[in-house]
Amino acid sequence: MSEALLVLEDGTTVRGTAYGAPGETFGEMVFNTGMTGYQETLTDPSYAGQIVAMTAPHIGNTGVNDEDPESRRVWVSGYVMREPSRITSSWRATAGLDEYLKAQGVTAIAIPGTRALTMRIREQGAMRAVVSTIEPDPGKLLAKVLASPGMTGADFARVVTTPEAYTVCPPAGTRTKYKVTAVDLGIKAATPRNMAQRGIEVRVVPATATAAEILDGSPDGVFFSNGPGDPAAAGYAVDAMRGVLAANVPVFGICFGSQILSRALGLDTYKLRYGHRGVNQPVMNLATGRVYITSHNHGFAAALPGEAHGGADNSNTNSNSNTNSNSNTSTEWAHVPSRARRPFDTPFGEAEVSHVNLNDGVVEGIRLRERPVFAVQYHPEAAPGPHDATDLFDQFCGLMAGEGK
Image (cartoon, rainbow, N blue to C red; front, side):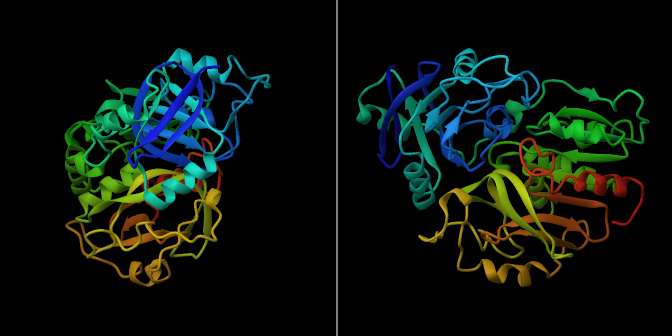
């Protein structure tokens, strides 16, 4: 088996075994703490422009299949794992992971120290990196990394979005109750599927759709999806969101869509030190006190009202914390709930923070108090991940039925 190199922009160099497609690939080095769902991770458009390291020690044992992809292709720039499975063992499998990555042109590397790599990212933050099977000189690779673009200012939503609109209908025999326009900023297939199962006809439109195009046909509600990149670079989506808010229709956003709502309301967004990526993030609903274990994939977050850079940016770590739990200890997180409970003014009426991350106090949800508008920073579609938050789709249906705000 041939050798491969992983080089980070701080000069960290890790030698490993080449996996997947031969070549050289650049991206932001991040880690995912999920113990399952590697195919969903690979095909999640939110990972565009990133090299993803899996903290689970064994990857590929169930191969890949035709049912689990979350989009039309693999979007990760590169892939890092500790021990790739030598066999594929699942009745659902149609191919092995190595074969799949080669077919998709994704360069990967197997290294002995994914835990050490994860700790490095936690300490130094997500950084640019390269995986190469063709260049043996770390110095030359480092120079290329330092010349590569970063994630701040990156506009990936328009890259991963659908080129044209399409519709996902409820299953045969299910009555259509509502019609929703979903703005594809990097949408996962499980999201319109979850809505369709609830009797929603979903018209998915490109990320660059204007408010007029989104509202064409008078939908009962509008959804803004997850997606990759820096929300500050997606001004077109912010403008569209403001136009939709002015129309006073029910709005639901997740992940990147939550950040777009935040910016439309006048909040800043900022880059987290190493982000939230995995299926084990504890999030509290401030109205009920209920804690959800949630699926995450984001590197940016909304700043609390009046703060230019966010009070909790997961920049401080606790040396005694469990690295694989994605536990980020901030000196300020304990004070976030009291500050977050205070409503704040926006051009569209009073808003409030609805959810916070219990690891680091990062804002995880925003809602308008007098309009049927809400968004969360996590993924309720559970693909992969826990099913704690699937009731958010029911809450969206409730808003479209006129039940509360």
